[in-house]
Image (cartoon, rainbow over all chains, first blue to last red; front, side, top):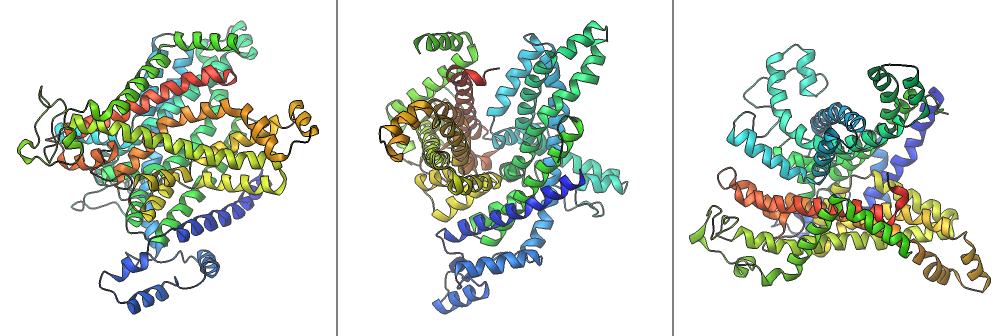
Length: 335
Length: 283
């Protein structure tokens, strides 16, 4: 098991090298002139040349990549041309906000999607099944940014139940920073007032984001439960007179969940890169908003940094999913 | 063929969701084709500003109300259908062409070429596609063509994997060996014997992808990259309308509903087509 984990972690190295090369090349091959933008509209050619020199943009591509890659290892992820702050520092500010949002959305999606899919399979072709299928088909097709807008209109503007946007108001004292995830920090420090405020701000964006993974998980769970219910061992358990609840929760659930797990992992990674829209709607200060700003100002280093960061998390989450899959399903030998 | 097709069509008709999807898609195609002829206020689509009729609520005269410069939201939403459908279609076609090309070469020739191309497409799958598309589109500058290219750049790996697998299976079949024995070269074998036999899974994937492609186009428009005003595009209409909330909600609701309807219709139809053309995937 430990050897398996080590080997998988070792396999991360070529993936990350490849990823950084790929993104770096794409970013550098694109037209557009960040140097001219950063130097300002009235810059003379000499000013432009000096800015280019400052950021090393006047050297050959391969040399630039080598500098960048060795810098990555030293913890130097480059400097944002616009904020003039180190990218790694920016990332560590924005990543926790995105992680909190994605985790909350996934928890919602799993907590509702798995029971919903299970029920749909048990009551196959009856009303709970039709209800969950109709809802999930609609949810997959709903643009997240439009849903977010509708939530803002309904719950924030008309009903006034929840805050319109943002993560934490400047007028309140935030909980002491431990993990960077505000809800968890508030819980850890026992600050329930702050917890309430953080949850209020988290609710709408998290629900808006959870809908499409929720739909997919429900559909997957329904399909895999139907398959498991037709297995011989379920018939045997029925014949032995085990209660319906016991069969369902003790034997069927575990097998059906493990098939759904891969989808959960993929979705987690996909959501990390897909927070851009929800963060834009709700002014959520996360990686997506940071990336959008970098894109609009054609700031290379933050774009590469965000992409690398999300790519790494994506690969790590899928490793984790494989490990949990092995634990749930001992027939899969991890070597 | 005909027996399978008849059975497939029967199944398709029996499933009301697929028929509903087909209905929505046909309606949208009709709107996209007729476009300029049925729009009540073509001058608004062309960019006419009419401040006298700002922010009229939905009524018999203005079905979807009017926006911040007095343009008819109904006309803009109708006109946006053609833009979104064409852009979505172009993304899927460009992505499929690149993917089929890469996948066919990897699957047919194998070896280090296969290894290299497949590792590249694996890497592309770990890159967050929306951020990549945003970055590429922003660097290339505004314009529909640039945006389509930017999205398609992260769209091909799915097709490459699919086609590679199909090509590897097909190239071992006897009719390919026979053609090779007759002296056909690699290019001819691929074009005339292998590729025509893998068309249907590619079409299924393209139809399944249409909804998501339209959604991605609208997303880029919403972020402010992609199709620029005055070209009416649903995502950018929605993005502009954000500033009009909550008092003038109709400027946002109708373009948003249009995106939902288009994505929903294509998703339903795609599911139905998959059952029709690819019975193995049916459950």
